[in-house]
Image (cartoon, rainbow, N blue to C red; front, side, top):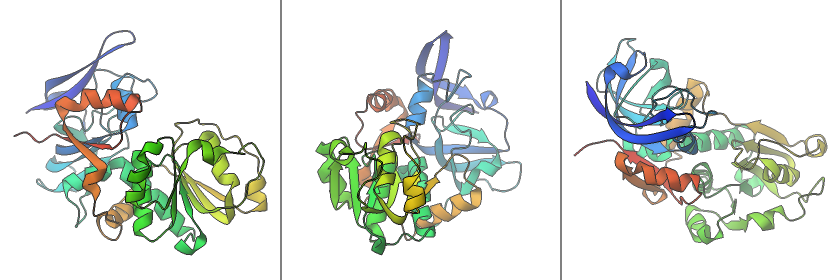
Length: 331
């Protein structure tokens, strides 16, 4: 069985080459589930894998793509039937296991979940791992008692994939959202998504060197890490909840314990890569139903596999303004 895939090769040390190649099923890793991929999406981790970042991928040749949605070809384990529509995200997909930038994937059946009713395969990849991460973050706010009456909710890195989807979901649920971004030219876009206030990164960080700041936020979804996360924690209201899922600014957290022991602020880490399947299913069901966004189309740009090279470069340069949906359907 032949299929088309983006393949990253390493012809010599520290040199990585990307090309669209025809591969065979025999070249894929072992697994009990084969999926014909209809759609994937481009994530920052994919861009790192595509450029040979050893923190993501060490073995080459390799096909990136931590997201995939498509139809089951076969399942020897018995959990799925041929033709079943499924979603496969994270775990090791697209890291050391050939991923969703190929028209076929072979993975453990335990990595897949059946597409929930109310969601198409295309819509599922408009969300992708970014939507799952946003959903997990919102779910933790709600599970820990943060309601629209708790006060404004801060979303950092708001123009990114996770941030923009979080803004839209929270706004749909009736929360008052403040978005922080380094791209103020995207203010109108964030307000269309539902943000009531948009702050520049510089304005938000004013006075951030103080040990405690004026209480403002009922909850926070941080997609950045570093000093921005620390500033958000310092300005969260008593008994507020802060979720964190990113480290693009820094993996370090320069903060003291005051917000935690004097205001009872709770910091919750969000991990979409190894989240238990039951939790994934719960969030995907909500994304397909009461959390479903009516305007997903305006949040994404659809490209073919052959157009990914340009988008990978734009992502690494910080120039992408929308999520990238990757179509692997031919014809």
